[in-house]
Length: 258
Ligand SMILES: [Zn+2]
Ligand SMILES: [Zn+2]
Image 1 (cartoon, rainbow, N blue to C red):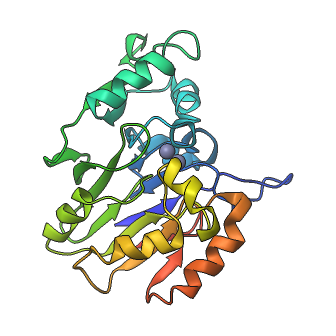
Image 2 (spheres, rainbow, N blue to C red; image 1 turned 60 degrees about the vertical axis):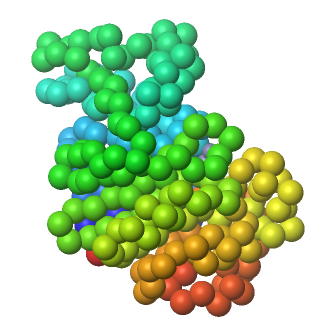
C-alpha cells in the first residue's frame, strides 16, 4: 500500500514545503482520505485515477479544494466522483458546501456521460469497500461528527486518527485488527497549548503519548500529521522528546509504502 500526504503549501516558484495546512492522503493513486488539497496538488496521473474520496469530517482543512477537484474534471468524467462519508457528514456537505451558494450541487449535475458526483454513505463500525480497499470507520472525539479509519488491503493495514482529542473506540477496533503497519495520528498543538487543544478537540504531543498507551500493537510506523504550521517546530521538538521509536513527522509529498 502506498500512501502520500499531499502537499498544501508552496513557495512563489510552486515548490512544495513541509507546512501542512490542508489534509489529503492519497492511497495507491486511487482513493483519498479527506480532500483538503485534492484540487491543487494531485499530479496529472492521479487526477485521472482518483474517483473515490473518503471524508472524515467537514472541516475546511479537510475538504477545501474538493469542489474545485470536481469542477476541474466536470466535462471529462466517465464516472462520478464518489464522496464516501457518514450520513451525518453528507448532510453537512449538502447543507454547507455543495448547496448552490458556496458551490453547485454537483450530485444533481450530469455531463455527457452521466452524474459527475455521487454521495455514498457508510455505516459506523462495519467494514465497507472502496475500490480495492476495506475500510472501517469509527466515531472519534472532535467538535463536529468525525471518523477515524482502519484501512486494509490483502497485505497491509493502516489507521488514521483524523482530528480527535482523547478517544477510546477507535483504539479498540485497531487493537482487534490482525496487524497494524502504520498509524497516522494528529499532533496539532504544542503541550503549552493543551487548553486550546482540548477546547478544539485536538492532541498535543503529551496527549498523543497517552493515546499510544491504549494501543496493543507494537513496531508499526507512527506518522504524526496535522501539525499547525504556526507551531510546527515546537511540536516537532516535543514529539522528538517523547523518545518513541518509529514516531516520525509525516513529510508532505513523500510516498510511503508498506
Ligand atoms: Zn477538524
Ligand atoms: Zn483538521
